[in-house]
Image 1 (tube, helix red, strand yellow):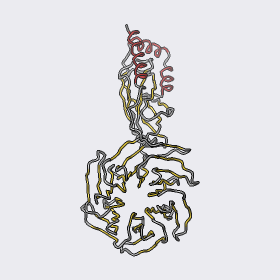
Image 2 (image 1 turned 90 degrees about the horizontal axis):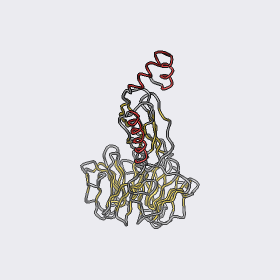
Image 3 (image 1 turned 90 degrees about the vertical axis):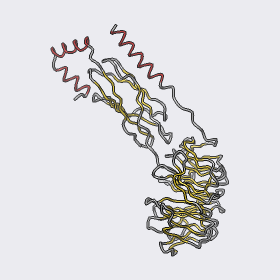
Image 4 (image 1 turned 180 degrees about the vertical axis):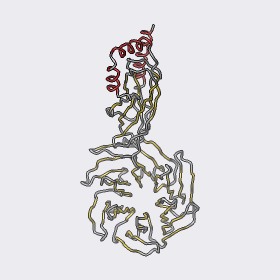
Length: 406
């Protein structure tokens, strides 16, 4: 009877391993073509589709993982530290902050053509008001903290590290840097329909010229040190940490990532009026879900599944600590959300806690998850084992060293 019970446990654990490898939930796939042309893209991407009236977040495979539809001429979006999303709606003359469910949790109205919006660490918000010919900063209650008026069709603004503010005057054909008093301290003139600006970490400035179809990088003297040309109405550009440039190309209906050698390394096509793009931070995978038997037998391999989902759809690898002092090195790479099966054999009848964690392609690690298993005493085996140890005491020491049990 005991042999039959052991065999039953063995086959049940095999069944668990094979059953849970039948995986994965249906995903909503972006209808556009996703091309990875030789470089792996890290982190999800937040995109504003002006014509399609939505803001969407896609993973590296082009799968939509979040979206807000039914917007009215959205022009800009920013993912906040609390997970909410800040959005400008040009035609509705408002800025909204929505949670992950799409509910409005903060709103400022009566803004004449809001184009760009930026949230500061102190909770204040910087707004580019195109039709109002100004850029202004408000607190959480809507009180104006700072403003620069008299601008000529402003389309973008950015607060830089020194406390100054970069502003794009699209019809003024220039980018200016102003201090708290509104005085112009630096500028690049004779531009053609500039629409976006970003100050880089090395002090250079990235400027998007829509009508010329180019992105230029200028130094502190205003000299062009790099130029990306041949674009069709680029509307937004962001320099990534690896030196690549992420571009929203409005007329070509695509998002492209361009390497320093000007090669396109990643592309999303088939979008409708992309006007803004933001690369989100790479997030760690979820702590693995562990499934398997909660009671087992000594000397019998027991099988467990470990399943972790990566929010960026990156591959994952697993590390398992079995609770007896032994652990597995990182497993072979698995697709996100697909179970990984591993087995282990225990030799001492006690309760064990299994620990497991996951790591993605880019080294982001999850928290540990735990799983409890009981290995009860087997009277036949324990009696035989104790008699053997009684005759050869050194075996106990050798076995404990082999199993790394302390």
